[in-house]
Length: 339
Image (tube, rainbow, N blue to C red; front, side):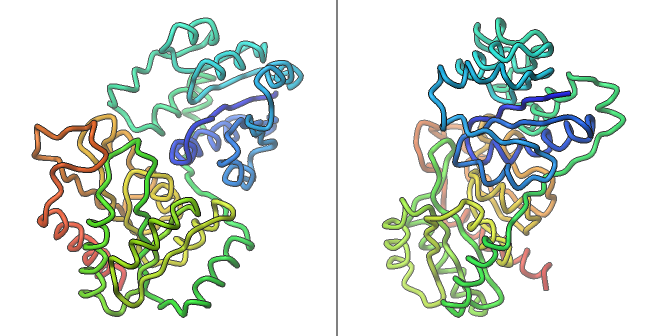
């Protein structure tokens, strides 16, 4: 049997699809499984030992890939996320079973085993929505083999990059990893608010160093953040290499703080203690987009009591000194539990 699974959007979304990839393998141990991804997610999926082939859709012109997909001779095509191009790929695959969420009109033409999910209502976790699509293949086989696996696989080269960074900067054993920069799909706090938070954390936990992680494109913001924090023992890791280098930095850390973004889900997969800042809005909430498969997470919801929060704003309207204190106390509690 040949199965294609498509998940062609952001890093966090991809990580929340790992349980689905794993379940397909559990259900069909002898199947040939191909996963379609964006190239920035390639490194995550290629390291999963139960995936046979990973295809970066960015490497092809759309017309070329639509012609190529039929040669995979897939029996099942599963779209965990659908846009117009993914719908075209599903139809072009000529798979006997084509499974995906039914939302836009084009999805009704693409999937012959589609599911009405209405994800915008956010009544389930994103990973659960994904797993529902896998269950559609064969519900009995799904129930018989059900197991949650969220693990990502780091290679020695990623751990070497992290070891080198820690050693060259003489970073302490106790380390807080902070990822302050996000793509804008969910609310965040400002750089100045991150600076104040990290200042206070350092003042209260002198035995801890802090590593700020960022993509190399955000290096200028990271350096400005270091200047604003103005404390020893605070470092910037601006990653210009493979995505999982940040995973290895997080893995070596003691605990993690961040918003609703890819590195937070990486920390979750690595089973790190996490304090995460999320919005209460259903489509941005922990219920829909929280860490999956890791119970050691404390969620801070700045707008939980603010009925007038403006979700068109990038930053929380309702972040206060009390919220900052709540985060600091949550981090301190995680540290006590780790001791």
